[in-house]
Length: 94
Image 1 (cartoon, helix red, strand yellow):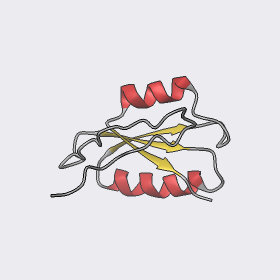
Image 2 (tube, one colour):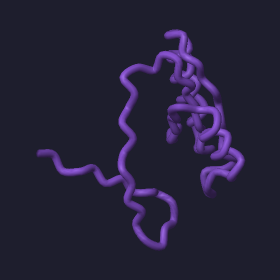
Image 3 (tube, one colour):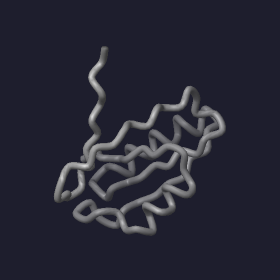
Image 4 (cartoon, helix red, strand yellow):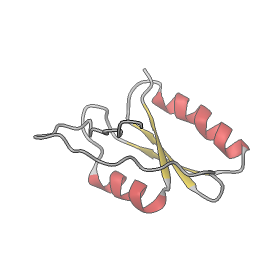
């Protein structure tokens, strides 16, 4: 039997937050994929490449960005991701 996966929130936390992982969808067809640039150097270029490959498969892609990598994403950006996307890819390139 496999051990349960423990996901941790990477933000500053006062105590660990244990969450159950979300089961990945069987297919991306019909889903909206959000691409989030965290503001680090080259993350936009990385996500440009990801977007190009996803769009070539006919998938719907939306782009989002944090203003800087030094602070958490503004509440409005997170809310847009939650409301508009089924899946999110975060660009962490340097």
